[in-house]
Length: 135
Image 1 (cartoon, one colour):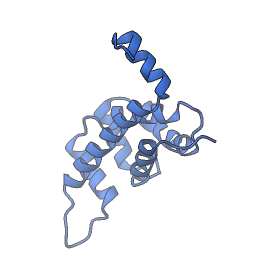
Image 2 (image 1 turned 90 degrees about the vertical axis):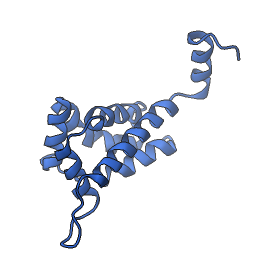
Image 3 (image 1 turned 120 degrees about the vertical axis):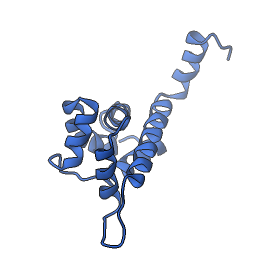
């Protein structure tokens, strides 16, 4: 088993803050926002695969799915995210702020995963060939 990249580990940890049951309203709301129910319903399996680092492309796939599902969340999704991350109590209404923070952090981390997932040798070769940079 490969070692999980730090960004992939952060993304898995962020996802574990959300409900694991795909029937939870959060997942339906996210699917409504992005219009991609199959992607949203597949996220659960990719969280586990990323944690196991199997298959090799799991971190990339999970990162792409997170960007699709949470890249442009509605107010309803932000409210559900807030409730998932911070259990509401009678003294505090979580509103949408926590959800917005979670979505921003998850998307930022997903982009980090995409930027870090390729081996350095491949990155340097692409920089050289695709971007005409001398090494």
